[in-house]
Image 1 (cartoon, rainbow, N blue to C red):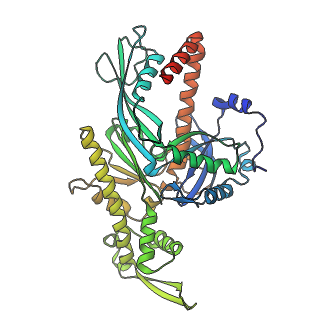
Image 2 (image 1 turned 45 degrees about the vertical axis):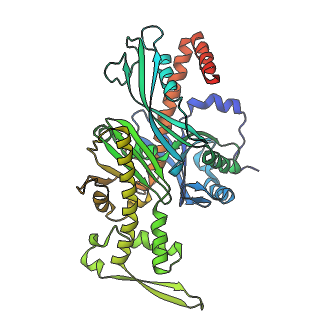
Image 3 (image 1 turned 90 degrees about the horizontal axis):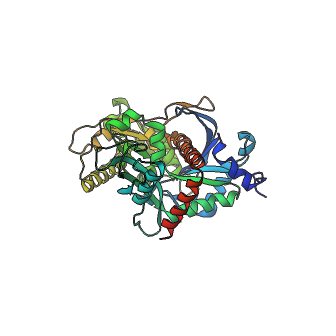
Length: 443
């Protein structure tokens, strides 16, 4: 039997679609599973009503490695959620990350039908922009408009209502692996067939929505969400998303390096990293650099073996792993900007989120490692803004994706509600638009 109450009617659930005020996000990470439920007001303020996290299993570097283990872990996460929510868990937004993400900037055009740009004209040029050939096995999850132009004029934020013969759009397209999406969907469905996934959301966008302000995006900023198994990046300039990508590496590589260096179990290496680690020995106080940790590990003869770990040496092991990732991020951004023929202006610098962002003094190391020409860059650790949490716990950088899923969900819901309202007001025209849309898709 399902742990969730059966929906009385799938039709009734569909009719409720845009009326739901409770948003639910599930973040399936490599080390942690998180479910967050709450509401988002018109100004973007988030009220989290429910939050739970559990250890993750069956995930490796952001990929599903064991469907059954992941389903068991999700069962533990979602057990008895509905009574605490006071609502049915029948829909959610799901994060997707890592090497499964691809992105590109594309261009689309459309002829304006009645010399005044309508929503249909705008949507047609966006649809034309997304008609691009993707890598085999990929499909589009986000189409983010950057700017519009009318009749080859200046850049426009919103073309609707303007007089023109032709409207053009520049968009940022994010696609993901269909296999990974299907694997995550299967894991959820094994827990309950009642839970419908409203959207898959790139976790880099979710973290950015949680942490970054419009001012940050306007003057240029790079968001780096650094988790246990993946690193996800979103770069904004003049409020436009222009670069996004994911890497299949994360904090677990540092944990493994510590475990191999000192012969420790991974669980103990992770505990030591989180409790005593820092982003390099140069960032420790003199007293800390002189200290060593003593840990006991079971030996082959059944007796405990005492191992001494220099805090300075531990910090340098961590620093090496962090530098490797930040250098890879910097190289990828430079490669993308060179391919696009642009010079990035990151006035707000870099913002770090994710569990690894809690590493002591990480922003100081990143300021050097992310510098393209050896000059220091601005780096800060970002925590979700405008959030009222369900308890007194501190809302840190590791909660960025969880909060961002809710904020993205509200924005997506508003867009769908607006589109539904326009279709209703246009009456018969919406039917014709749907027929044309079907015809274009069939070609």
